[in-house]
Image 1 (tube, rainbow over the protein chains, first blue to last red):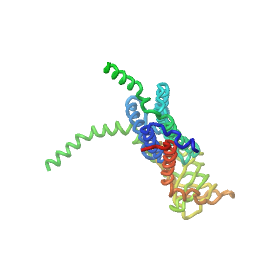
Image 2: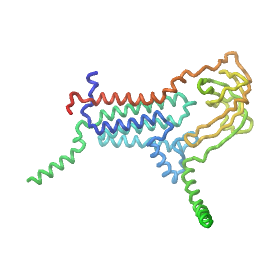
Image 3: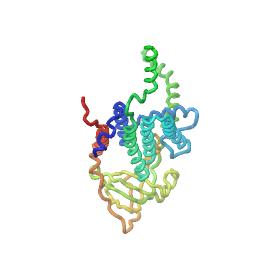
Length: 168
Length: 175
């Protein structure tokens, strides 16, 4: 218990507050799946953009035809691509923050299923999305910077070098 | 009078582009695909059911056995399951396991996820077969929790705020 309290006490407070606010919003949307998720805006914008080029229809309907399923796969693949990008560039906090997008993807799968008919799959996706929001919060806390200067190391070095040159 | 005619003209002139805009927005979004069907008689079996004390409604899980003769064969398929909510019928007692016949009507709601909204007319229900192992419908076990659902949602978020604040607590911090 003692080791648990204050485990991430040395983390950047700005990142901690930000992840808490994002967690609150995402958890609220996950618990109220009929409300409008902020990332729905992204999905709908993509649909309207590509809908002019291809015969894609609404992204939340994979029941009627394959274009919807393809579109859903494209929409869901965005966080995966982002995750790879963040991990390759060792942007740990961003990759942790990206888990909230995975939670949204799971929530979309939950929305797709009629929870009254497909009870177990829907419940599983609901629990998965809720778990992912919690995991994302804990990961964000874990991966936030211990010293905020670390994030601006190059800039600080450059600044200091410039000052040294000036003094010389 | 003149200004009224002018605004009327102006409205008429702006209608085609507005319609075009609406078509461009609504068609890719599939918002126009609200298709109604029925009423149609079908035979079904009650698989599971629950009763709500507050509203007096029944929530039925049904399975279509024989669809109606002419309408919507792609929707009312034999073996397809639906969840229906209806007021308890006055003229008969519904039981789990019963085989019934009733008048269905519905719509495909393409607005969100292509769900099929199904409505069953309670007055049209007729019992066809009642097996010996039919069970009477009990009250919902979860209904008392519904009242506190919103508080539970808030409690979930507050709980994780508490955990997070414990995790980021700084020992012996001086202000």
